[in-house]
Length: 431
Image (cartoon, rainbow, N blue to C red):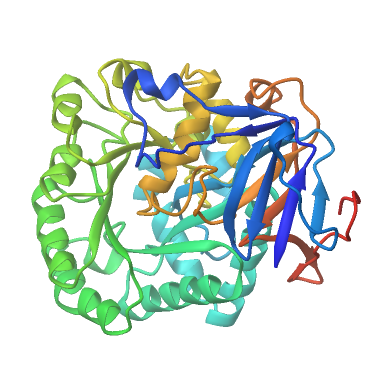
């Protein structure tokens, strides 16, 4: 199938060099083409350019009139927990009353509460609930997503989560990467036997996950009150023996050594990073590990924001992700993440857009195929409503400006819970 998108106000994030990511001062550079066109062949970007370079094409080709909207590469959300059961709004009220994240966890809330809910939920029901969230994030412009386990905390329930993630990968148009996060918290049954739970993760869970080929990556919550740097190293080493590359939670609650541990083990990304100082920045520079910020979680929990400006000025790249989860960031709206990056972290619009596209793709291991408008990359895109500029995108923080989403080269919409491709009719009509 061929699809021509024309009459755009702007093509945003057009890159011919196929750079893996952008860092430091270069994060403020966002290449664009005003009033451009883009041609898709099957599910790949085949060409693009300014309106006056539009080649002669068969009148039979399917055409999509963007109506002056801006064309972006779809968001790459590199850190989510969107497979979960139920919700935790009662803890939300506890937070309003002044309880901290750690205090709620000590009372059996937090991750342990989600684990209890998930244990009582069938795999089919868990898939149904998760697909509702999948449809939601697609409507917000996400085209690639990483999804973690971690609300199981038993071998059986971790496998249940990862099987649901595998099914999402097979049945939705999203590009999905799966991450095993058995070391998300110490379950109540092991409260007085932390080493026993680490043994379970290493000796039983990891081999079981690997046997079914359910995880691309492995994660550990390396932070105060969760897993130590030493425990994290042991788990990551076990995962590496089965080909699972690290992507870890680090330094959300304190200077935990998680960033240094992640870099030492060649982590693709280290995520959260509210507590990042000069030592951590020095370790990250030139490491190949992507620092990934989750502004929704810090905002929702009322926590300290990570030093994003200091990190960029030191020459680091930054990615941003939603951290979509029921306890600390119950939203997968990546447009809102872009706005939070500007409002809370003081990122320029260009830096924020780079953080959720090209750098987000790198943080998922998708740098060669996603995250930019580049010939040969996957045709995962969205068209906005009419805007005066790309700066308007984060500025209008409460408006959903995503109008049309194209995944794998097809316009997608939702009908009766199923994804139904609706190729627009020939001519200038717009679906």
